[in-house]
Image (cartoon, rainbow over all chains, first blue to last red; front, side, top):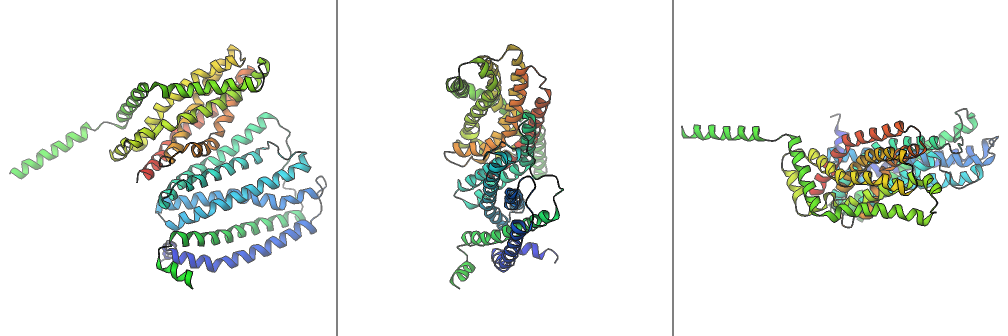
Length: 245
Length: 245
């Protein structure tokens, strides 16, 4: 009885309808929080005493970087669930995650490099975080490339799930090796986020943006998931009803 | 009576079969011997990655500068980038032939541990490509102006590093088994995962060239190799099974 909700997750029409019902909730709360966070971050919070107004790109950059990792983890966990319990919907979730995660990673890279120009005087610095973000972007590209290489959806799902699980084990190793690499090279080290001695007027909008971005990801994931489920189940009769209604 | 005797005969036959069943290590060493024998019959496949390694190393003096003092500075990068690329080149032969003539399928059906068999195949691959590369690397170092005292360090770091490269490559090759013209995809999958090896390997080589102790990065390389030996055959076996379905 207690596991009914879990078993129902395996049913595509149930997942499709649940996603449809939940999407507006996530989308609207994300929109409200992002607008609130932007107002707080761009108007209400004071300029930084060292970086002036330039630091404000942080409000987009840091949540994007956070999501680039969260989405990868979600993708790997969904892939692992699909691999172990052979749950088709979990693979659909993993497939929907990849382009979203790649977009957030690209956003984090672009905003980071735009931020680097006024702060470091260059668009690109071989900073450990930027570098491991770039590697993460390549991991996403590889995952999507592997997914696209198979015609058979089931094989593509399971093979790419193995890659996602291997990748998620490797992400921390890659990250720390890059951190050590840079500290060994004694490059110009720039304090990234500053110490957590951020004043509340800056920290609160940032936290709001984190939650808003995460909800935005959930909303986009649910929308993509619906599309993914429709394509995968296109032969089923309930899809015909959904499409014609 | 007759039935009883037949049953007994069958039982003794089965128990004989069980006691005859060779251990995982016996099967793995048979596999290793087979792969080595097959590879030496096609010597060109052995020589090509080595020639490629030498060729890539030759490109750098031509592109950068023929001055040995400057070449010595970039030698770690040159040696490791060339080693990474040539080990990539050799990956295509790892499972391809066995997959095409159905041998791999028989391995999967044999009832032996596919993980152990693939570990043996990977070991053979390292003996055939990684080890020769490691023996070539000091030669490339000499050509790039590295002093003789640094050569044991180069040999040690490339020897240990190529173990991990072979293991990562085995996962990549197993994932792309069913993909035609997989070369570009294979490099997109394996190169990001190889970055820790590149970082610690190049660092060990650099310290060896400067005459400083290189034990720390070498130990980290060894840790990566141990981790790879633990995880990679499992992932490769999972991928091979999915691709054979």
